[in-house]
Amino acid sequence: MSGLVPRPGILEIKPYKGGKSRLEEKSEAIKLSSNEGALGPSPKAMEAYRALAPDLHRYPDGACADLRAAIGTRFGLDPARIVCGAGSDELLALLARAYAGPGDEILRSAHGFAMYAITASGVGARPVAAPETDLTADVDALLDCVTPRSRVLFLANPNNPTGSYIDEAALRRLRAGLPDNVLLVIDAAYAEYVGRNDYTAGERLVDDHDNVVMTRTFSKLYALGGLRVGWAYCPEPVADILNRLRPPFNVTAPAQAAAIAALADTAHAEATRAHNDRWLPWLAEKLTECGLHAYPSVANFLLVRFPGDGGRDAAAADRFLNARGIIARAVADYGLPDCLRITIGREEENRAVAGALADFMVAGGGGTDD
Ligand SMILES: *Cc1c(COP(=O)(O)O)cnc(C)c1O
Image (tube, protein in one colour):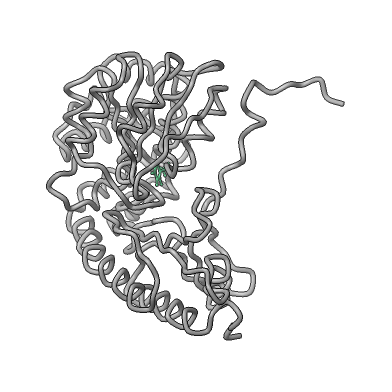
C-alpha cells in the first residue's frame, strides 16, 4: 500500500469528461459536443501556427506581450491587467488556488460550468451550488449562499450548458451583494456570440471594482480549442497574483501567434458570429416543430429537453444520434438528465441533427435506423 496521501478534496473530484469526439463505428462523425466555433479556425491563424514550425526549439514569450497587446487593442483594455493562460481553464484553476483552500467555499450556480466544482475540490475548498430559476443564475439565491467561508464565486455568463445569461444590472447587483473578500469571476467564454444590449462581458465591472475578474477564451468563437489559449482581465493586484502563480511559459509560441492572427482576422470572426445568428434560431425552430423544448440560448449551442414518453428520453436520443454518426453532449452530470446540449455546426451538420431528431421523435427510443 502506498503511503502517499493526496491533498484534501482531490479524491472528491469526478474527472471532467469533455464532449465525445469519436464514435467507434463511424470514421467521420459530426461533432456537436464541445461548442467549438462552427467555421473552424481562421485560415490566417492556421498560417501563423504553421509558420512557427522551424522555431519550435525556442521558448515562447513568457509574458505573452504581443498577444496581450493585441487583446488590449481589440477589446479596448489595458494589456498590463491581462493575464494569458493555457485555456481559460488554467486561469480559473489559478484563481481558485490563489484565493481559496481547505475550509473555504467556492460558489457557483446549480447548472454552472462543470469545471468550477472540480476546481474547488482541487484546492481543497468546498464547492457550493446555489439553486437557479428557469435554468438561469439567480442573484438572490447566490447571495444567500455566501458565508464567512466564501472566497470565490464562479459565474459563467452566458452559462454552459444552459445558454442562459444574466444582464448587466443583475451582474452589478450580484457584485454589490458580495463581501469585499469574495472574488467574482465572470467567465465570459461565449461573450463574442451574445447580441443583447443589456449584456456585458464584465470589463467595466473589473474596472470599477477590486474583486472582479473576467475570463475569456480563444476556444469557442475563435475555434482554437486545440491550442489552449485563454485570458483574464483583472484588477492590477489580481494580475500580479496570477503572474506569480502561473507557470512561466504557460502559453505556447504557436498558440500565441495563432491567437494574434485570429484576433486580426475580424472578417472570419464576424462570419462565425453571423453564421451562429442564422443557425441558432433555425435549429431552435426545427427542434420545437418536432415537439422538443429548446431553451433560449445566447451562445453557440442549444440545451434541448426531451419529453421522456414512449422511450423518447435524452439517453435514447443520444444513442439514436450516435447511430447516425452525430455526437451531442449528454448533460446528466450537470443535473440535467432529460436534456442534451447541441452545438451549432455547419449548415449540413445542423440539417443532419435536425433531421435525425425529427425522426427520433416519430420513432421513439425503440426505433433505430441501422
Ligand atoms: C469551454 C468553456 C471554458 C473553457 O475554455 P478553455 O479556454 O478552452 O479552457 C470555460 N468556461 C466555459 C463556460 C466554457 O464553456
